[in-house]
Amino acid sequence: MKLNSSQQKIAASLDLALQAAGSPEFAQKLQRYFADQIVSAGVPNQGVVDLVAAAHASFGGASVEDWLAVADVFAQRNEFHEHMILASAIVSKVVRKIKDEGQLLLVFERWLGTSVNNWAQCDDMCIKPIYLYLKRRPHLLAEVVGWGKSDKPWVKRASNVALVKFVGRSEAADLNLVLANCQRLLRDEDVYVQKGIGWVLKVAAQYQPEPVLAFLRQHLAEIERSTLRYALEKMPEGLRREIMRAEV
Image 1 (tube, rainbow, N blue to C red):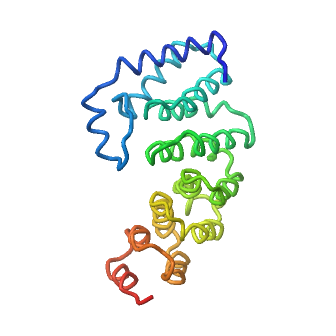
Image 2 (image 1 turned 90 degrees about the vertical axis):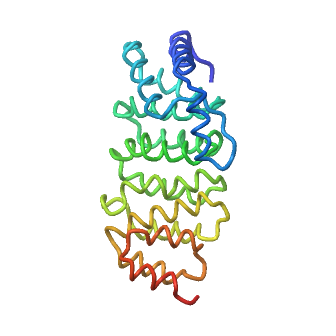
Image 3 (image 1 turned 45 degrees about the vertical axis):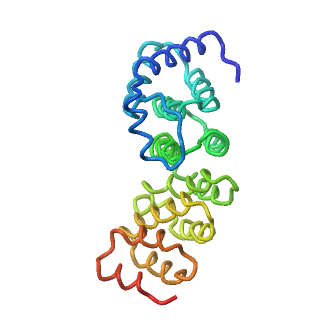
């Protein structure tokens, strides 16, 4: 996407601010959380959020469309880990002013499929801008569950992680759909897809333990042990032991 002159000024300002805030020491510490090598500017997530807030105050005349264009450029560039965090922070800042009914979901799905390259970028997008967007459009939750049919690993992870703040709390988060999506992904070989399954099941079990337990028992032969352990994390110890020791 080619930015107009106003949008270019915003992007340039954010580039400079990110560079100035970077810390090689923090970038080195951040690497410990990732199995694969990442390229980091050395700015913590909250620092990125603060940079976006400062830019938003400085460029008060910019439209929502301007900010979304800038976010898209950073997401597509994604040279540094923080570029994707920056894109998510920009959308989070303006999402309450967005009036569409699903178009932004297509952008999120595209970013997850073509730009996101680690679990932290995926989860930051799910828990912040995607959550804020869906909070006002809970009828779109089923479309996010449908991401589980994707062939892109971060899209598949997001199909569950984006629901962790909705399951058990929103009537629009149909547990049957969530469980069906988990079943569809049980044999997926990606470790982060598996962790996403465990996460959403763990949260769902805190609100609706019986159907989640029934699901786990039914699929003991398929479910990864690490996924099962994660899903049972908040269950009573005796119940956890019973299920973990169950013969398959």
